[in-house]
Image 1 (cartoon, rainbow, N blue to C red):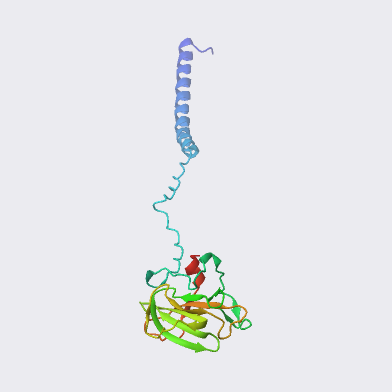
Image 2: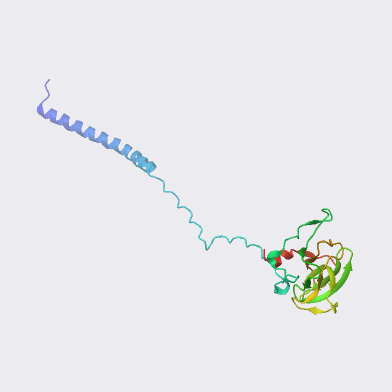
Length: 217
């Protein structure tokens, strides 16, 4: 039987209502998914890079070792008259006795008879003759913590005596080749020994390179 015009209008209205309801349901299910997708697609913010260390807060560099100083802050003079620091050669680490020991001193070459002078002020603690060092002198610094040792002298300056106070540059004796020095190569054997105020002149002490002190290297 043919559908009336009124029935057709009613059918269209019902169909439209059902279709709208379906889209509402479907749309409600899709919306959270889209939001989730948008959230997942959002870029993750990078963490801020650590700030560079400024020079003011950087760890300080390790300080270089301080240069060896003369006793009591006094600068040493070359203990042989007429010899300049730039004429010296560092013999501190040379081997002696066929390699059995180190030199631990400075040999200052000069003609025999050249004046030997005090490298610094101090007190003559010992005048001593030995088979190895020949005519030797031990002078202790005013703070008693350093000994200056002079060896192979040809002679002492007349009147030099133990207990005598000497000034820097004061004459002590003459370059020679006494002891086990080579007569063809007269020189002064000069050593710096760090010690303690209570230690005797002959007791073990720590040798310091005189070249470093005199030349400043």
